[in-house]
Length: 472
Ligand code: 5AD
Ligand code: SF4
Image 1 (cartoon, rainbow, N blue to C red):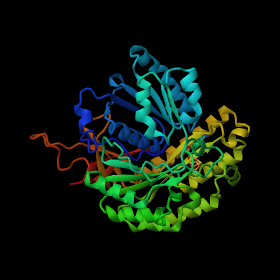
Image 2: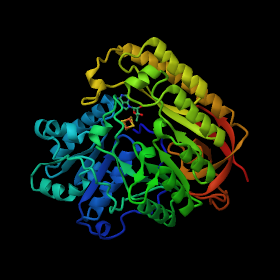
Image 3: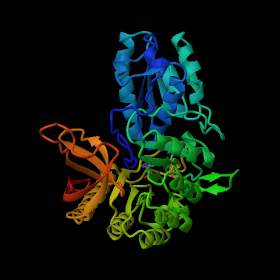
Image 4: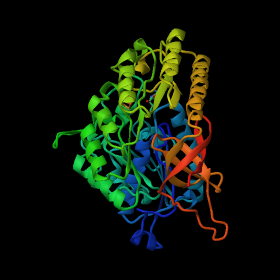
């Protein structure tokens, strides 16, 4: 479901920010179900949507069958993301047949371009609401209950939802969106069109929010933006490195992560700030997209492979243990076999801990849309398989080299498939499984709870997972 690295996983049942006031106690409160697709930014937006609706008296449900309002928070980054939504909508048609008064809404990145098709042609959807219009939700949902369809898709230059308290319902990890939109206009990417211009939240509000999260029991925070290196609080004159420093100082025991960075403006100051603070996680997601300068230029990425490698050298020089992940697109228009091999070569040279790898998908309104999508589908598939295979081999080797080492793991809770195994993450964002030690006589967990940082000796490793045992 998520395209970006999974930085946050539901971890515990206790709801630190769960609805606890009138909305849940009032039996008559209407119930809202939100389903989220796409990146972490969308996950964070869903929390804002829930926050808006909760303060308007809605109760939350995690079962669509129980809901009076179903909202899909959509992603438009690639064609297959949109296909998933269309499939889901077909399915939701049955819910609607069963319950005439059910309100169904489409939110997020697909809203702008799908408004007419979704509301008028398909007649399944009552509401279409873009990423900058979530404040209109309660009023439009109310009207939808009266039978009136609603569309609100205007993008804003100023909306940051600064005064909205996101409804965070679970976990020890929280997301904070520090900025919205993107001004980079990579030629393949629809985000500048679906999410609009870049705008940053005030630094002091972000630092205050982080402190409140720490006080509420969260142990980790991820600062989010499409391109966090462009963060700028114009009033305070604060750039992203300053914000990171202020946050790290404000909550010295909280793990701090961020995503996503753009290689063009990954500054020395930012790398030095990361190195300076123990509580800033030693993990960088730095999308390279391609190993060819010509392709990077055609993508309007604004850096060369050499500039990118130089940034990584700086990262490794100051933080030798820092984990690196990336995004790669294969089959961008005009990409030759030789250029594809340059990408493979770059990935071998850098040896990423992880990579998110995609076939190029043409998106309307982007510059690349006007180029011929001339790499055949079979070639894209083969190229994708080649980079995946190589990356899995490299990640397995990197992770197996950790066998025997002791890693500090933030305990997130039970594993999804096997309750006898618990899961957590290293500072470097590696996923770790370990036996859930219980004292047989009392049945109690031996010594640690969700949110603790424990020492785990790594005993096994695959490309995606480490397995280990607790060190007493
Ligand atoms: N086709 C394929 N992948 C894309 N991405 C963005 N737009 C497209 C597209 N049109 C990938 C990039 C980006 C990640 C979030 O999604 O690699 O970094
Ligand atoms: Fe899209 Fe490029 Fe902006 Fe990332 S930096 S969101 S790839 S336009």
